[in-house]
Length: 113
Length: 116
Image (cartoon, rainbow over all chains, first blue to last red; front, side):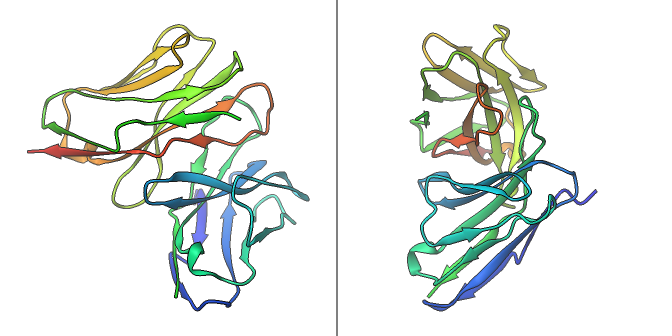
């Protein structure tokens, strides 16, 4: 059981480049989300999805795009990378039931130069 | 919107001693879930303990326990017999129970150091 898998683990981008952070889960979880973690800021929600074909914005969605074409995958797209997007990104998933913990991927450290 | 506040950016504890990490939250809801997550240097987010607001009994998991004060909107984490492996960032998190698909709201974290 792989859980939540994020790729890549590290990435360096140049300003203006685009890329996709991959997230896949093999637990048939309905709910998936993306967070960014910055020093002294905790984890802030970027986008989330409650099921295939359904996505919504979180606290800090600007500059990011998501889609959910399957239950398993929830990619995060950076449209035109900016230095302010330098961060550690976490993908999380959980079942749709209320009293359940969220399972996190191991994170992607992204640096935009 | 709900907010979670961790007022201690850093804490330290001697090995084998007890330490308490503070967390307060702001909500107008009566039913919700509270969590403590641990993030060691490996970056992995690990659930430490969970509390349902409708339960008056404080949750306990081995050396980890919480002091849940619903009226005060306080949810502190007590680590007993601290071990070197407890050194990590600890995040307090809140989730509403009213809507099924609400995300976790995190505090800014407390970095815990354990001194040998």
